[in-house]
Image 1 (cartoon, rainbow, N blue to C red):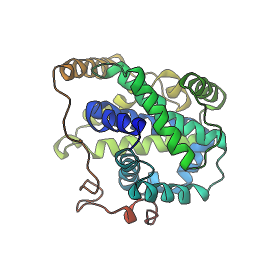
Image 2: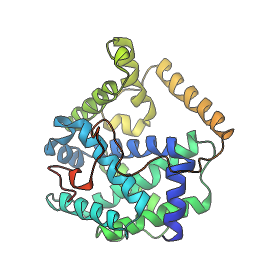
Image 3: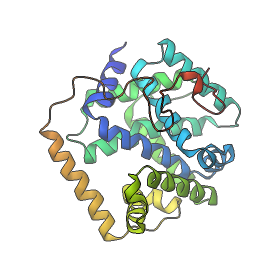
Amino acid sequence: MDDAHRIYRELVLREFWPEIRVGLNLAFYRTYCVPRIARLLLGTGELTGRPLKRAYDTGVIMYELIAHGVDHPRGRQVLSALNRMHRAHDISDADYRYVLGTLVFIPTRWVDRYGPRPLTAAQRAATLGFYTRVGAAMGIPAIPATWEQFEAEFEEYERDNFAYDPAAAELLSSTKDLMVQRLPKPLRRFGFVQRMTAASLDAMLDQRARTALGRSEPGRLPRMIVHIGLRCRARLRRLRPVPVVDQWEPGRANAAYPGGYTLDQIGPSGTGR
């Protein structure tokens, strides 16, 4: 395990586990803001036809890579599955680099805003180093070598490519429905709770993303609830010690795989084999 992987693994699976989980989800939702990516995602039918499995498969893929790295047998199996899934589609190098960039910048920005402390320079370098290795293993060319260069390319891509598309609205609607389904059963039947849950996602997005997704700025109440709640949690987290064990473990049961999973089950039609 190289230093970049070791540092990044520690910050994701232990020190910033709650924040990185949210940040990685927001990174994925942000890809809906690019019309051709949104249409591709909608066209697979996975996000609307099997949203629960698709959501957990995405998490499994990410955390398997983070936990084991690109050189571990499980990491290599996940990367092989990813490459098989992506070869079925015509995806440009710029789009690949953008999606990779969402994993670098969106969780980092979320941690800096709502974590117990911002990432250190070493943790930022490790984040970039880890995803540079992942990108190279996926054959993504011309990944910028520095944080500043990559972030500048990332920002330029969003300015040039973000736009509203009906496919994005359909994907976002499916995502919000899934969020409601994951609430405790007694709460799901209350319309106010459903609306607040859906509005909370809008409140977590920045204005550029909301515009591309066709969403207006949420009302003051959900914005205050989200912001104050997250800032209070950050203050409390500063008082707690960093966990000494990983907060995620491979193969464990979840809502999509109540009996646990194997990598062969991950992806459309079990492409993880």
